[in-house]
Length: 154
Image (cartoon, rainbow, N blue to C red):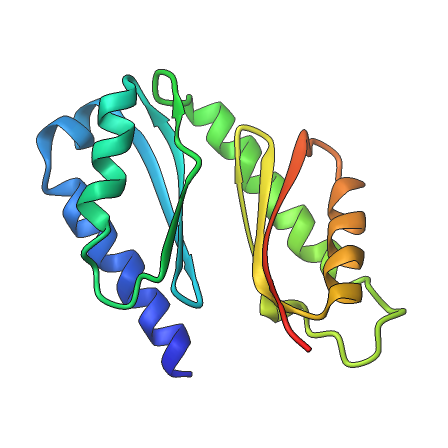
């Protein structure tokens, strides 16, 4: 429970920092997702300098153990693209509930986020669970690529 609250706090602090900066707020589209102290940055920024700057602004946040910066250099995505990504995320989450062959698998231990058709998977999983999650996610319509950011447990 404490880790979940920490992750929510990391996400809220990140958004506060980003939205308090006029340049970032006006010229980028950034999503922040935290799981077990891993902070995933996705979205679009117009320059490499701004992409790097965003990660650096968030690095001092307490309880952030690692930052994975997947922000691409591009104009902010369209509302249509973001809606498509939301649909893919929902379909991927739903697909996880259809994993029957894994004893004691809990789909709620997997955090799913999608950006430009790329699905990012985060969670604390056993090796065989991670592979099953990736396999089922790859079969979801609209998924261009799957990026695994799992922490593998015993």
